[in-house]
Image (cartoon, rainbow, N blue to C red):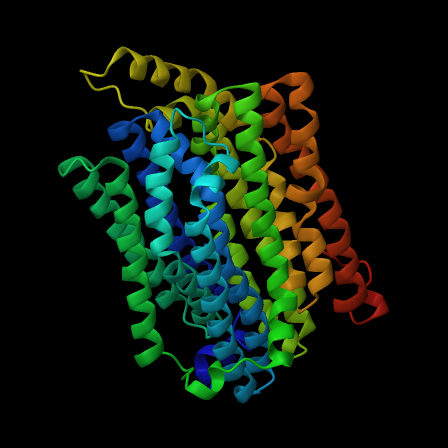
Length: 468
């Protein structure tokens, strides 16, 4: 069943494999990130800066539900990759079926709860009266289709684990292009405002989910039947142990976003939330090639670790850090040199705007470039943090992966955001990001280097070799 596409992970050149896996993943992430960026640009230019504030407060909960699928997809795919590497095809099918059932049940339950308690949750997320109604409209419609997003995120990781990254790329491109087209039609042409933005996103979820169903019905090497969908305790525990790593990280990001929104509204105002909305979307967009390398890295490491080809695992770590580091340096230079030009894309300068919107736009242009520079200040070194966390997750070491995944947001960034703004105001929020990046990279680098020396270097003569 594994076929040549999966066995190639254990035989082909690491550089070629990484490019083959990372380029489609990067393109898919780029298109999805462009979708998020364009969505934000359309809202900022066609609805107003407060629309950006509205989606910024909605994002934590919808992001978390979508992350259920991402977490189960990444954690389960680690189990699936190692099963394929070991030639255990029955286990691979069982894992796939259990991943599908878990994603549907958990994401569906959260979506229903989110709709029942929508009024309370919107206030808790940091919305004030100036944009509360806009946030509610967007939030409610998104939850109608969020289960499709969760299943799409899960399935995308399985496709990569099968060794078919081009299909995974297509699955990410379809909703992104569709959302941009529907945004233009529903917001600009039909003038439906926040409702139009939300329905455009819903349609994008449905289009990608439809493609995913087609792929697994006709193109996948994995064929589901009812037997594989039945949950098995041992499989669920194995998936959950590794999925908890990504889920904890994504949950921490959601908690962090809620905290940031509330801190910014307390030491600043709604426009500071809009500024963070722009910065956070640039984080998703600008780092797409680095995240693509990380995603391409995982199935290669998982397969070769399962096949006990530890030299190839070590080579994959070193090659991935080199490639991702070079890309991160380019991103860093662009952000540092052109922040004002980047921010101006999100703001409308058309004639006929009312005085308040003009004032809000000018304030966004004044505040956001410095915030963007601070948040991206440590970009060149974060690749060690990303690759290190992905390595432990890929080889099935859930506890180290979980702890390392929480270092930036959980152990460092959240405490810093609680402390620094008390003395530095809004600037304290932005300064917290590079400090957390440096600290978390130091911790992750130490544990990754120790793991390579202890586990992946077989002879005493090689003990001087570790990660680059």
